[in-house]
Amino acid sequence: MIDHQPTGQTWRRSAAVWGLWLLVLTLAFIVIYVIWLRAFFEIYYVWLSLGDASRLIYELTIIALTIGVVAWIAIGEPYLAAGARERRLMRRFWYVAGPLLMAGAIGLIIPLI
Image 1 (cartoon, rainbow, N blue to C red):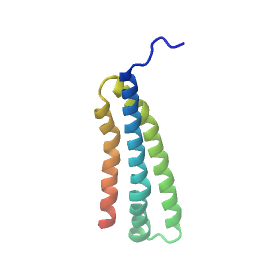
Image 2: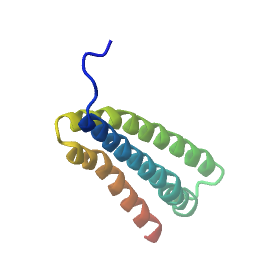
Image 3: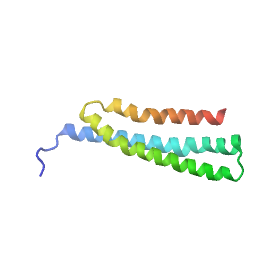
Image 4: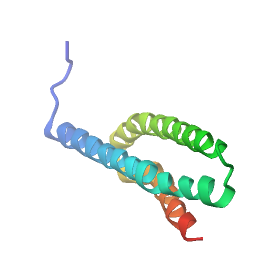
């Protein structure tokens, strides 16, 4: 049984949390599957040129990166929700999105080197 009825403030806070979480999810997808896919291709096939081992190392790196980012996103949602309750949602959003933005910037620079 619910002890209290949700108010308009609760609905807005939940919508803000889910909206920012979806933004983090989209950012993570772009960073991994658009930016770093190309960066790792550049590293393993152009810079290192390990022959047949390049493909295996490339695929294992993408799998490990995907697992890490999925964990980051899974931890990020409750972290954002707790920040919304404490009225620190945007600060917490930047703590979650900041490392993704930095990783994306580094991934964009690597192929240019």
